[in-house]
Length: 414
Image (cartoon, rainbow, N blue to C red):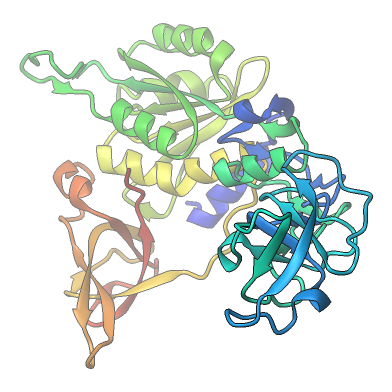
């Protein structure tokens, strides 16, 4: 029987990042960078005004106030979008300037229009009632980004702010990893679609919906195929038909130790999919391998709903990161205090559904406590739906008392 770490290590050793491709900025949104991006120019590319007002020489306005304003001749008009002025400010003069316009040579500060009479005298001069500090309201060339600086590294998720930065430095194309395409298939003669009245002995398929939406929340492009009966040829034909649009395949059901385990019986004969036991609860029966001419990775997860979901969190989510060229998170484990006592089987890592609550602890301070959202049964979907974390109990721990510190894995919500 493998440990959780051993099984995950086998999985990650078989995966390779999807080949990168170039995308225009809007199409790159939501992807992960496959390259380090260097700025080829300074940002801002020139000194420019942060305010509508007047570009001045500080020496000409020192000491200006309401009673003794500095009076300067307005010699230039500088709207945004014009080329930088080559005319240096002469002593006793200034330039009317708009936000974003290049600062003229000789100017070392901007006076906001609110600090002036805005040229009300009509004689080509402006009265300045307040002196700025050196460099005030000037956006200096390169103060944000310097040419040659790495502004975004490979693995960065491209959201709105990152796309804006790329546009700001002039990039229109970037190399990104494709979004993994995931095909989800449920197996079992007992399954029927939601909205259909089940016959005696049948149940509604929930796993394909759970796994498809979990993969979507993890950033994948998902294709739900639905149910496949317990017939090996139909299963193989279905998978082969889907490989053209799959970077990863997930099946659920048919991998346990009993009879009629069609996934295990059928894929096991191929020799490229390995079935094993992992020392965890729920989710002990696991299968992983590759299938098809492109060696597409396939996860064969157990059929119990909670087992399938926990297996996805523990094994499939890291695989999706690997396909996108991302390293696995190296984070400090998050802990909480158990709000109640419970047992755990020796030799297996248990993943219990939990709910987090804040409890006062010593005045203004509070600590995070976790309570069980349901029992440990791998069929209990109600508790899973109301859980916001998994409580992780190590293999060697058989009893957790109220107040003990336990590791938790937060569950994503949308």
